[in-house]
Length: 111
Image 1 (cartoon, one colour):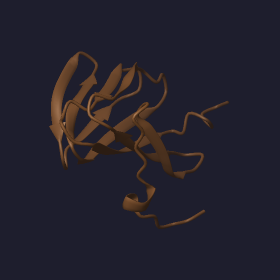
Image 2 (cartoon, rainbow, N blue to C red):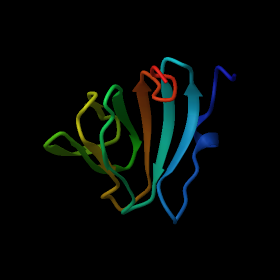
Image 3 (cartoon, rainbow, N blue to C red):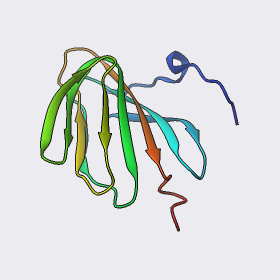
Image 4 (cartoon, one colour):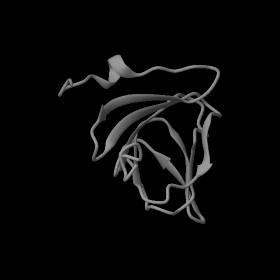
């Protein structure tokens, strides 16, 4: 597994839908790069046992966590605790790049 990666080399956008690019993963957590064109979104959902962090690298959008929706931009970070509904949407006019961390890794969480 590579210990160092370039986000610029990893980014991948598609007009079809938001792209998730895995950067790192272990049985304990994962780190993805979400690439959203304007208007694209991650549908609202929840994880029963996993916490998620969104860190906005570029662009602007909205994040819904539980019942609270907030506009976010570059260098802002959000925490969605296990069990809370959450959603990410690019509401800006430019591309949005977001680092996403989740633990424990749902693929390995007691399954």
